Length: 151
Image 1 (spheres, rainbow, N blue to C red):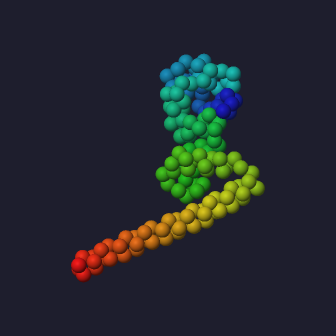
Image 2: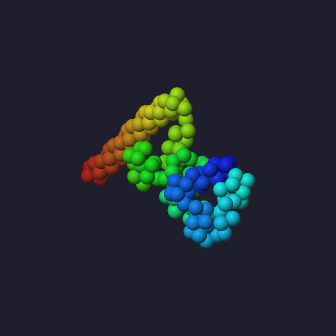
Image 3: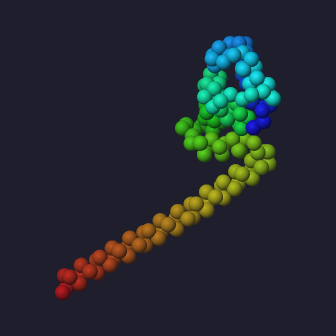
C-alpha cells in the first residue's frame, strides 16, 4: 500500500458523495485538520477503528481503501464471479487474477484446468483403492464365515 493510494481513494470517495472534510470529521468524531491529514499522502493515517468506520461508511473494504485491491466491496466480487459467501482465500485469488495481464489470465486458467484434471485422476485412484479394500474385507469376512459354518 502506498500512502498516496489511501489518500487518493479516501478523497475520491468523499468527493463522490459531495461531502466536505468537516462533514467527514464530524462522522469520525475527529478534528477537521486530523481528517485533512488523512487525505494528504504525507499525512497521518487513521487507526484501525477509524479505518473500519471509513470502510463501512463508504461501503468499501479496508483492502480497497488501503490500495490492496481495486474491488470496492464483496458485492463486486459476487458480480464478477456469480458466487455468494466467498472465503477470504477465494476473494484473494480473484483479486490476484484481476491484477494479471490478459495473457497471464489465460495461463492461469489453463493451470487451474490442469490441476482439476490431476485432482480428478487422484480422486478416481483413491475411489478405486477404497473399493478394492472394501471388496477384500468383504471377501475375508465371507471366508471366515464359511470356515465357521464348515468347522
